Length: 157
Image 1 (cartoon, rainbow, N blue to C red):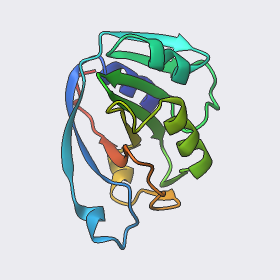
Image 2: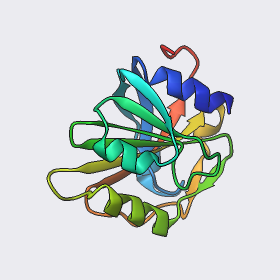
Image 3: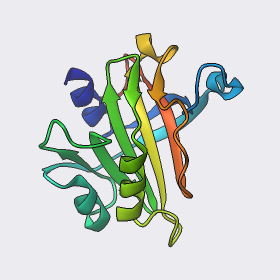
């Protein structure tokens, strides 16, 4: 819960995050690091249905679920036609259920009208170097990118 709160507040400011593509440890891309600028959100909203709320809601508002067992992600915001969804985890692995990914992409109409979905598995910096999802490389949907994201100390939270 602390990492989730940290991420929620960090998204209210501009921050640079180290990420990598969501692949297995034996894939050469596992060691490819990308720096992404995320955040600068202007609001937060606790809601029961984050997906419906972000679809019709304002840009740069982070919607987070009142349900601790919300499927696939913990918080989401959009910036224009790009949706950023975050699953915060403290484990060394996390499920990446294909049915949930496909359902979210359909609900947000990803792939039409230039809409994209970026799904981030956000993990503590001490876990990042060994983190994988299950499956390690989920089947992509057109317009979807999946990343591992490193949460470090010193973010503007």
